[in-house]
Image 1 (tube, helix red, strand yellow):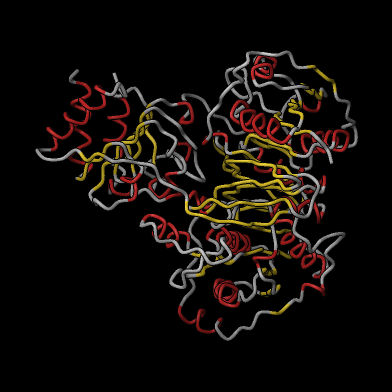
Image 2 (cartoon, rainbow over the protein chains, first blue to last red):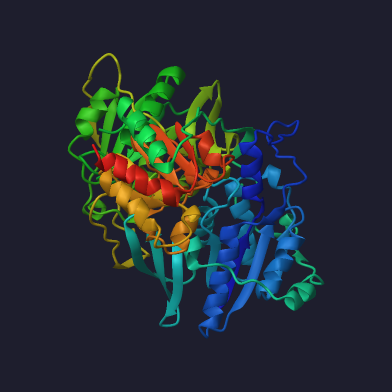
Amino acid sequence: MKIVVCVKEVLDPDAVDNYVLVGKLEIGEDGKTLTQKAIPRLMNGYDEQAIECALKLRDAGIDCEIHVVAVASDPTKILQHAVAMGADEVAAIPVDTGTVDGYATASLLAGFVKSLGGADMVLCGRQASDGDQAVVPAFLGTMLEMPVVTIARAVEMVGGSTARVTRVTPDGDEIVEVPCPAVITISNEIGDPRYPTGLRTMKARKVKPRQVPPDSLDLGEGGGQPRVTMTRQSMASITGSCEFIQGGSPAATAQDLVKRLRDERVIE
Amino acid sequence: MSSSVVVCTWDQGRHGAPAGAEETLTLARALAASAGLELNWLVAGPVPDRVPEIAGKYGVVHLDRIEDPKLAEFRPDVCVEALAQYCKQQSPKLVLVPQTFDARLVAPCLAARTGAGVVMNALELAVEGATVKVTASAYGGDTRVVYELTGAESCVVGVLADMLFAEATEGGASAPVVRQVLVDLGAVEERVRVIQKAHFEGPRLEEAQVIVAGGMGLGTKENFQLIEALAEALGGMAAASRPAVENGFVDSSRQVGLTGKITRPALYVGAGISGASQHMVGCAAAKTIVAINKNPDAAIFRYARFGIVGDAMEILPEITKAVKGA
């Protein structure tokens, strides 16, 4: 079974969060790019979990060929991490990510899947922790004419070419069956991604991802061109004016709080 | 150039109105007025009771309906097909959908089908000349980004209705013209088969007026009882941050945040929660936030109205007592 996992390189969202909280996030002269060198670049967490999902299918005894692909100017590090986790093949589509949107990214990824002669399953993280857009999988499914199943906590194969997927919905778990090939997006509920051993990590550092030039891919009609362009980025403003209730014992503080909440008619 | 903005809904919602419809109509109406676009509302499938009344309140010109037995219950392939055929007939400039769980899938699929651009997590919209600008939340609420429609004629926009407010027209209600839109769904087959439906009973976090939430600062699952006790005393619901859910303090239906529930209660008490943006996006719209944390620099205090620096395990039972002591 051929599985393609699509991964994205993102800025560490926790580091971004910390800079925003102290009001010190730096945005470049272009008005949109986060420029702090101190913010690490990582594989998007949900994408790591998508790799974990593929590895779990292999653990379940399914003969899997796991390809991991990234669209970025130099995703070598995250792809080496994918190898350390257990990916068989890794490929980089070198593109300046500032020039593509979800549609253009999906065109590249769809072209890549076609260049492999198709795939039985395409796995993506449920969303990227930078843009939070979660639109690539839907475009990808439409372009590859595959059904899309989102936000999975478990994926298993039943009867050869059907995937049984447990989705995390606001109303609890939903179980669906989808004929493969299919695009499936993975949520954090699938569990922590495995942590590669030091030896595997060392070995993976020697791996050079296959470079796949965008112009070598079939991008379909209008494929490479973005439909939307990010033009600005700014810190969200946080509008709190916290009044600290302090002094005295926990009991006195609690009584003070409850009194304040009653005075302001927040509670009865 | 096409000249309409259409709000699309297909869910029954609760209380007779599709989820997020009024907030999305508020945004759509302002946009339609400023850009000279016609405001329409497409309801695919059965029309919830309050739709005609709401359409009037928000100045909807055409209330478009697609009726088909295949739309009786939401299924993504059928829904996308119906919306795509509608867009082909009507060529709206902007298609706005309240960003529900299902809309997260439908909106980009629709854009993929119709050749439109797509922006999710939208909070603001503007049309300036020929340019469409969409302001969206990114980095789990930490940043705001502006997208411009550059390579397509139309744009599908997922609206973060849970973080916006609804405001009806001042001029009073008007009567929208109802149009039946004909589409052919004969050929579409649902590719994904539901084996077991999600089933949820009981009160919903999204509708709770009081929420008491706990995080990793509680230390253990046992201590989560302190959260539940205060929630009960306040007549509210208990909730948790994602790490607390992942550590089994409570099940995922109680998770607040980017990948959990977006809530907007009158009172949100967060105890032992540091306040990462991915959590706060799920409660920042609360009217009053009370934060309890050992760390005076915890991010949650920046969102809070009242803060207590201290040990949640000591303070929570005292608040419960004080509430009950009334």
